[in-house]
Length: 607
Image (tube, rainbow, N blue to C red):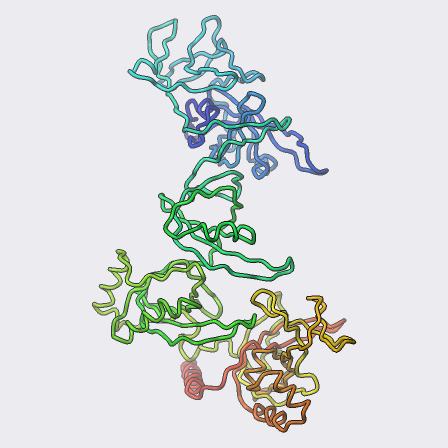
């Protein structure tokens, strides 16, 4: 086994408050202890650790107790304490281990560690310093007292700081004149804590020390970070089962290059939104830490095309702007980036003018959201940053590549809207294949595209009466019923309204060259198919307007590309496949012709 070296003076320095030491120590003993808590609460573990000389009793945090239960941490194990706190409990220093790494599961006891008395006051006659092969070891001593370099103030050990000269670090043994060097440890500055008595366990009420963002982890209860605000999002409103709410986020960057996103909800939005300013430095503490989502990324690319801005309607009924641009880089790939909201008229308009004038700028995208739906694409969010021709080494290198031949280099798109014709509407299926391939029978729905025509549409119940109430920026849309007063009553909102809204709920029969099947189309898809709103069509029917039948006839026996969500559902004891129309597209003859030609080419190549 390779030689193991424990951290000299590791126990003493840790008890003195050095939280950055990360000492390597050995487990001498481990005991299970009961804690006050609800019935059935799991026990905690107290372990005795040694640095080869001194020892101290420590407590494992609840998230580390599995190491003890599994036997990975046991007597003789060599561990490194990577994160811990030191509390003052009844005049004694208590170490709580928040995180540690097991270096060696089992090892012979190293050195001659001396177990400290329960009082926490070291016995000066119980330790002696010996020098053996340059490695300090602790042995027993009878009689003479050794100056250990530890000054006791109360019961808390403090490492003395060297005041001057080299001799202040020396300890001289009474029996010989060989000097023994005692390392001195200076604890970091910490404000004097103001502790209050809360019974057996005392709460650490000292101010949290500032630590780098890169060292944060979800198990930290107390922390503080000091960082500069690099981006700030707008206030967004939402509605869920708990009610209405609002949220905003801002990004922080500290002096070590660590980055983190801070999200504030509801009352904290009112408290901090106006106070937080981009470019200013803040100290943030007392938050809940969560692992970062991996669906966000940064990239540097050259803008090769910019599409015009379009206005679309979101599911909540609100309109927003959308603009798509195409980026390419030295990897030989291109990607679609979708701008939303203010990005379209701000950076989007500037990029469009540059591209139309023959200038292809380098664009740095920070905190873009990566989408995996039918390919890779990137979308902006409120806290995204778009930097045009940034002064970065990567940007200069990219510019040189583009100007020296990269502009004409062929690229392959990784985004769904820019893929070749053969795979543009990938996972193309026929009606019969939906059943034959067993689609929709898994845990998640299957998404397929079908080229089919509408052959029948049920007209007795093609829409439903919907609640018009606006909850934040979203319409309720729940079904309403007419009350005795003549108003429309919504059970969810517990309100009645003089007027209601109408939303599509179409039952369609679609057909291709292989067979027929039923599908359901909701508001957006129904409006795309019929070309008018559900309210207008309902009024046509109520007033016996001939436009009702004309509207239905014009969409029948027309070919569409239907994006279907296929999922098996249970109705009583009957299980059946339900097809829901998620998107409707008109047939583009050019694209369809290319698709057929590509299919023929692949078929000929297989022979």
